[in-house]
Image (cartoon, rainbow, N blue to C red; front, side):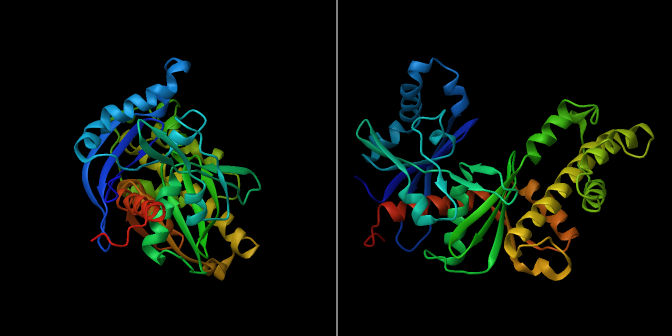
Length: 339
């Protein structure tokens, strides 16, 4: 096995992204090559009896030439590939969970003489008291934890790590563990309302406006609990009355949804930390907030957070994911003599 080289990738619902990495002892990983392939949903839609062989075939079609050139090497996969519709099911790990527990809970198997590890997802009872799941985002959390606080991550203060996307994750990290998290359906709800409702009439011609976005945020962050449904129709009525351009309606809708997400998620997490609702100076219990994700979407969250008094650090999703793969590789294949 060539321990200085390994393959890792995120095999999600819609896409597969594979990387060929070179590991160094005291320097960041080097990305030598990358490949993109079909997601889990596309393979699952094929003949049921052929699903496992389909996953295997797709992987080796994409990465086989790397193995032919460099020889056998370990493979680390994360995402929906470990779900019940994936290649091999990787069970969920219960929160609170440390990096070591997540790595130890991996599902390992061999295919064509190659050693594979699929990283487990996480499950928790979120601050609402309902079950919650994460699969794929744990990789970025591992990468951030390692980059910020080192391998042991003994920091005791509470930090929120926000992973914006179709299903936003708000994760509470403290004492080297992912304590809990909550999922907000913000991205999917935005897509549904933008493309399949009366609120947006011309989504294809939308032109994003910071000012209009912040108008939506301002309204959302001043609502009483449970009033988002009543506020959403303003996206339609303001257009009809000439107070909102069709080009900027999507910006307003985005502000309403993201503003509501921010206020609701902060309140839940603050309640989780201090055991009471967010009031006045109690917000200090959250020591910092980090946003990991698409730069444009993360910036929207940063603006919304700043509007309610929180500064948030932006981190590049790919960079953090690479750190996550590196942390997993080092845990599974320690090679102190590599340079």
